[in-house]
Image 1 (cartoon, protein in one colour):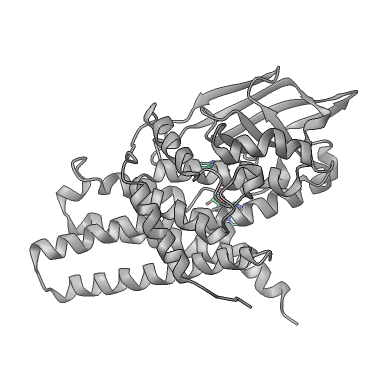
Image 2: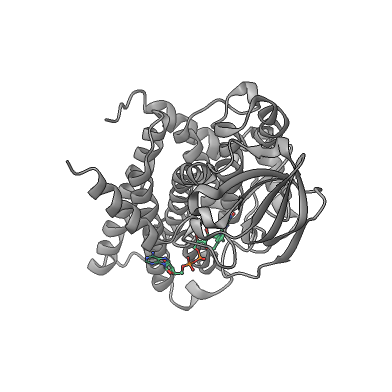
Length: 372
Ligand SMILES: Cc1cc2nc3c(=O)[nH]c(=O)nc-3n(C[C@H](O)[C@H](O)[C@H](O)COP(=O)(O)OP(=O)(O)OC[C@H]3O[C@@H](n4cnc5c(N)ncnc54)[C@H](O)[C@@H]3O)c2cc1C
């Protein structure tokens, strides 16, 4: 059951974030400007929102974090995705499963924004099905030796700290899956080609190559064979940030629809219906996203709720961008207006951190599991 107290503080925080992001740049290609954006966010503490102050974070909760991602993504979805991957996918598993020494060594610089983080799960033959991963980790005295390839990893051009998911024994299935903390300069670890993609082009997405990569045994994250559990919990939180990211894109496109009607004053029933539908979609997506963040604040797993939020908010972003593009006619698809970029960025919401089909599978499984 959700306990909702003092919601006003979140709305005030949202205004403060808007004010603090005034100089954030909007990116449509991977460039040094991403680093400038990340530096600005570092100064404001927005690279470690949900982590305790003693570990370099702002000591705020998941809803504050979702609000930060939403506001960044209204301006620059590429930066929003970079911050989401850094905070939810890399810093979170270290915070949750790392030992004290690992938290001091890795979480503090991540949460302070001194170092950027990434997480590598996806492989050429393993995307939606995380249990299919093939990156081999073999224990050898004081090291694990890693061999394999990761694909489509956000932040890989900037990151210095990587949480990498491998398997100690593929025949064990999920029970062989294990997580490691890898530093960029570890021997045998290299960044491969950068992907040339449809949307969020300002964020880096590369291949990671492991060729007899030497990972010291101290960099095992948590326990051997428990990586699958860690990654499922990590993705649960990650989905909240992708819902917030989608919400930011949806709100920006909705704003453009309102501006269009204000300028053209068509007072047409068709346009009014579009506005009413978009408004309802956004309010609903906001509630689902904030609700799953608030559940997470209470320390509860929110697999179904975060999947509800991610599914709904990502489809909302896509739909509203589509409406906006159509309303503006040829100008909508022109590079002069930012809408075509937001339309491209919106498609990523439906794929990253679990596709819409996978969200539906999670929701249905959770519903059926909880039947008495
Ligand atoms: C911009 C971007 C950034 C990313 N960043 C990261 C990152 O930082 N780290 C990382 O590890 N990964 C990252 N990814 C990878 C992302 O998580 C995967 O793309 C996603 O999990 C889907 O996997 P896949 O692309 O291999 O598709 P596949 O799993 O091959 O799926 C292909 C299609 O089949 C459908 N499908 C698959 N299985 C089922 C099923 N059981 N039932 C019904 N339909 C199914 C899917 O819905 C999809 O439509 C990123 C992806 C993108 C686009």
